[in-house]
Image (cartoon, rainbow, N blue to C red; front, side, top):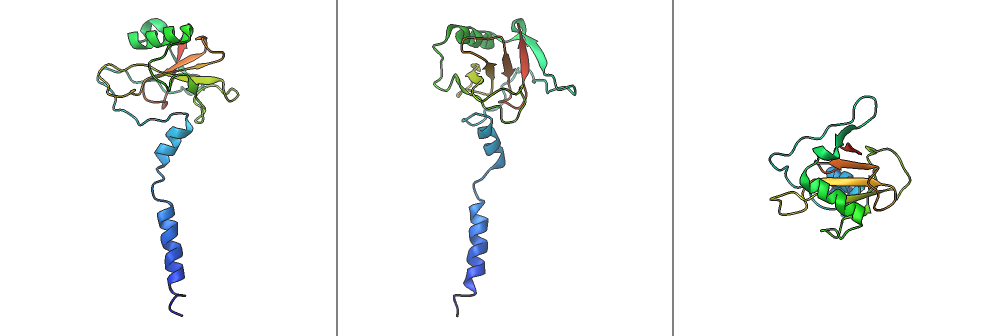
Length: 151
């Protein structure tokens, strides 16, 4: 008879413990196609524009990109070799910040961040066939916002 009172407590405890360790922001980051932790924003980085009310993204010209971003675009066109093993992996666009395309359309590449001990937050995401840079987007805040890279 003493065991009957313990069942509701065990059930409640398992429900509480079952939710532990499930960080919603981490799950959102993983859903976007990324796998590493966010690095702090580096001094001197410009803030990315957020999508405007019309649903279009702000743009940045190739001339406005940093030297590191320009180098990443060059490597994409050349097909590598890329500095990080994670470069060229599938970007799922789960947050739907980029135009919708079938799974496998977008791939993500690291833009080196001077002084960063890890990959940092800067990325270029390109759509379409590999080695093509006609449909690419730049983010300096780890997939929170994007700018379309104008040809």
